[in-house]
Image 1 (cartoon, one colour):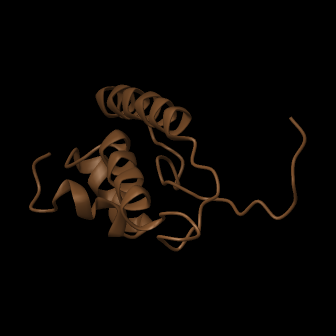
Image 2 (cartoon, rainbow, N blue to C red):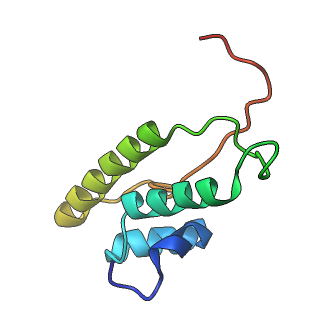
Length: 101
């Protein structure tokens, strides 16, 4: 990572700032995901010890998807390809109802 932004604060960036950082090569989706997952671990806790905003965090899947996005980013930068506007931006979804499976 070549910017003054520390790994632990990458999750605080706006989507626009993340996109600029990705396109400039300052950081990668993998680094943003690591920061995001670290923040979740730091503050989520459980019902007794934290805010419990996330009932399930898919760390392995998120890390794997971020690694794939990082590879795709590097390839796109080499070829000069455009990426979707929200490429590599982490999102969280709220599970409103119990899901089967």
